[in-house]
Each structure stands twice: as structure tokens, then as C-alpha cells.
Image 1 (cartoon, rainbow, N blue to C red):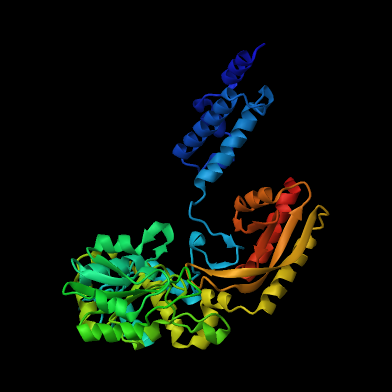
Image 2: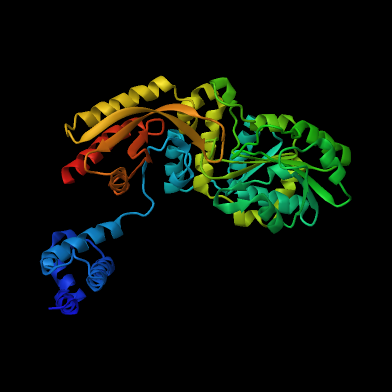
Length: 473
């Protein structure tokens, strides 16, 4: 019998979709499964089997096609289909503000306030004191001004939106002077020149990649210059023979020629990290004190809140920005506002805020605390008692992430796992497919978990995941 004849026999053994649906009626598992999901899963399983047969897969034989096995495959497919696509994960990468894993974790009080506002009506755009329509921006404007020292503030959906809105309002049809060394690209291939072009601003590059002087800015000022722009190089650093212009000097130049000055801080922070033994990062308060007319930054990076683009600055310009019709397309919803307000309130007392805001807590976590947690996880894994598994504690360097503090190496401790007969790639794949996915990294064919970003209540979950993997291996 040639291969084609074998394939034809196997293809005839494949059940029809109606037959599978009938079989499912006798399985309690399918009782509450929507018929559309069951039918789609059945078609998916049968089609995969048909494709494997036609491709000559040696794994498909007459013994792998009984109704019971096919129904089990359908059950697994249904479980995948019913599982939420956006799911909680365990971040074992050591990258604190991990863009692919949801960036900053919210503080407990921010989560609590978010749930309250989400499940009940609120005064989102209702002024309780006047009994009339109000502005959603007023919910966070006062506290943003209080913390930063700015005259006015507003919030949009993200910092790219904030930059676009400000440029479109202030410099549409006018030249925007910016240093060539600050024409950054952020995640998703969004570039400052591209955002500026869409806003209608006309890019005027000055200086060189590594050196820009005040005279470069001044020489570029013309009658149609609408803005002097400074962009913080938050996701990379130029070292060596370098020079740039301070915000204070740029503000003085702007005042001389009556041109507004804007600073895009990217991952804005209200905390001077150098006080905690980390690299110095310019703070929002320092930019306000330097006299910038408009400042933009993210809410979900070093600030430790929800995704948002925060705009602060002088009253006259902020009023113009608020009136721009584009704000309607970029505005944030009540859930973001609820989480952001609660996050900002933690900055009123930074001593407690450093612990209550997860991003700040993880960035400043003492090495000794991380090492103790790594030893605890290592011991828990050893207690599984599987001799195939080798466990070692490894010195690591964590990262801030989120396009912030690119030169910062945070000393950390990790747990490295090797299992006899199982590759690091296979371990990683299993952990990704765990009921609660565990995202680590591989170095030198060892699966590694960095304890800086693993929460205390996740240690047992990790142990159980490895225990289950070893039982099935």
C-alpha cells in the first residue's frame, strides 16, 4: 500500500463536525460552552489533523483518530478559546517597566479606586460644587500642579499623543528647532520627526548627533520659528565627546526671542533617583523650575501609574491646548483618571510613596531583600525532590525598562534552572503555556528568573508550575 492510499484511509477516518457535536452532548465539560465556540474548535481540530495527514506526519495513525482522542483535542481547543486573551503573567525578566508585559503595576489604592469608579457612576464631567457640567481634566489638574509646581495641567491617552497635541496647537505651519541628537525613536517605530510632520510642525534640526550648542539654536531662529523643543534621551545615551544645551539656557533664549520652549521628558519622574543610589534622572519639578512653557511625560513608566500622556506648563499655552478639537480624540477615560489620581496622591508623601508604588519599590529594592527571596524560591524548588532538576543562584543585572535609565544596571539575584533531558527552550515554552504564564529569560542554555520583578505571592505559583512540568516530563 503506497502513501497516498494510507492517507486516503486516514482521511476517511476523520469524523464530521456534526458527529463531534453529538459526542460532546454526553460530556459535562461542554454543557456551558457556547455552540459557536464548540463548532469552531471542532473544525480547528479536524482541519489540523487533515493537514497533518496530507503532510505525511508520522504522528498520525489509525490509533490516534478514535472519537475519544479527537474529543479530548477539541476539549483542549475549547479551553484555549474560552481563556481571556489579555491575561495576568509573572514577570521574571528583571525588567521593571516591561513594555510587552503591561509596563507599570498599579498601587493598591489605585486599583481599589479604579474598581469603585468602574462599577458605579461618577462625577467624571460634573462639577459637584456648581451642579453643572464640568471638565474631566479638573480631576487631576490640581494635584499635578501641586506636585510639579506648574500653573496648569491636562492629561491625554499617552505621551506620543501629548507631544502631537502640543506641537499641533503651538507650532502648526511653523518651524520647530530641535537638536539632531534628540530626534529619538520610541517603541513601535514612532519617531519624533514623524510625529512632528503629522502635527504640521516643520522640523529644523540643529547641531550634530553628539554635540549641540546654544549658538546652533539661536542661528536657526527665523520669523516663522514657532517653538524650541528639547527631547529627553530617555531610551539611549550618547557618551564621550558630547555637548548639549541645558533647559535653563534654552528657556532664556526663548524668552529673548519670545518663542515658547517645550520639553518632552518621555519617562517623566517626580523622584530624584540619585537620592536612592541610582543614576540621576531629570525630574518634572526641575523642568518646571527651569521655566519650560510646556512639559510632556508618560504616566505609566517611571511615574508608576496607568498609560497616560501628561501635559503641564504655563496657563496661556495650556488653555490653547485644551481648546484644540484634537483633545477629543486623545482624551482619557474615567478608569485611567481614577488610577492616575490615586497614583499621584502617593507622591504627596514620597517616603511612603516609594513603597506603595510598585515601580518605585522594585527599582529601589535592596539587593539583600532580592537575594533572600531568591534563596526562598530556590529552596521551594529543591523541595520538589526531582533529581533531574539543577537549581543555582545567579548574580544578574535588572533593568528599569520602559525606555528609561538606559545606563542603569540594577544588581539583582536570579534562580537558574536546568533539567536533565529538557532544554531551556522547552522549559521556557512550558512556562509560557502555564495557566498563569511565567516569563523569564534564557542565558547559556539556562532558564533564569530574576527575583526583582517577581512578587512575593508568586513564588508558590512558580513552584507548582515546575512541579507540574516535571510530572508530565
